[in-house]
Image (cartoon, rainbow, N blue to C red; front, top):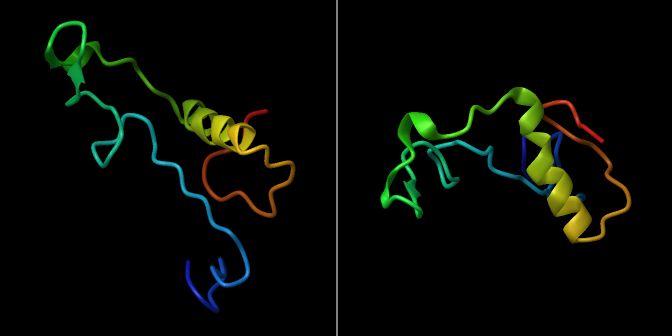
Length: 79
């Protein structure tokens, strides 16, 4: 799906991928340590919904002052 000569062609497009909040694969999540307590967040970690996911991507696009996106793949974009 992603790579040279594939639908999301990395030789033609700059591809940006934002990790989902709450994921255990590189993002802060329930297993992360809460700096206020020194313990894992556990069940006190905020509930995240599908509509939450576009927020970090939107912040990243704003941070880099990107004015136009060719394609967005994933959860619905929330403006």
